[in-house]
Amino acid sequence: MRPVSKGNAPVGVVFMKYRESFDYLLDRIGIGEYRNIKLAQYCSYCERVIPTNLAVEHIEPKKGAYAQPQLENSWTNFLLACVNCNSKKGSKRIQFNMLYLPDRDNTFHAFEYRHNGEVYPSSTLNNAQKAIAVNTINLVGLNEPIDTDVDGVAKDRRTQRLNAMALALDSLEDLKTAPQNQTIQNLIVKGMLTSGYFSIWMAVFNGYPSIRQLFIDSIRGTRQSGCFDANGNVLHPHPNPDNLQLGGKI
Image (cartoon, rainbow, N blue to C red; front, side):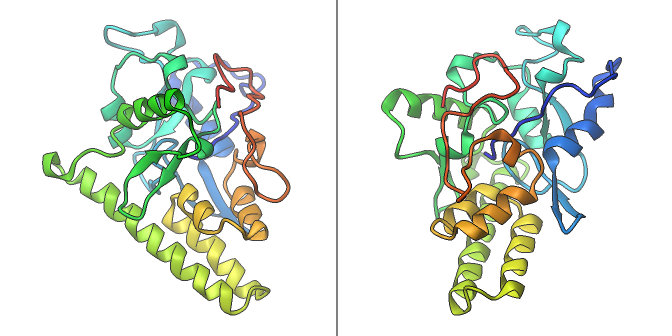
């Protein structure tokens, strides 16, 4: 998951309906752009490119047994989610101390994306931290088994991750042939933006700080999170610049 900072609620805006926050959220944390050209928008959880039906997602549910209706229109309770992550998360109970969330934790540090298309807790975590990472993976069903897939979502997620991994690895080989070639670098950034999966591309291009910097600066809200240094290296815990509940656990 790509760590982000939403910033403070838009000045002078009081949301009467939570859907009114969508454009602000997209502008703050959802858009990937190249030379001011908006190329894609992304789910805050699975990192997929979501051309349509990206929605305002309530971190703490607005309905159900664990509903927090007082937060229905609260900026601090919003992320962006695809239909699949949103429906899988549903109205589950949210315990911030038992989850890593991209607006308050360095979720890039918490997870790793394997060549089999699955998401795992990072090997750098201790056992307690790994348990929290697993809770987060399960919350939105990032590793739902393909053999229980009824609508193709699990297979689709796995396939898209595999494709992004393959494209990133191929792009790395292109870069190795001419590391200073600006055209190749530009194509790599556009490839990352249009395929999605920021975390996969960041992992593949570990050791290439100039490329990682371009990735970080190309998707809104990422640099603002404070989770990466001037060489594109990960910094943790998340500094939680937005002062969100139980932020900065990792």
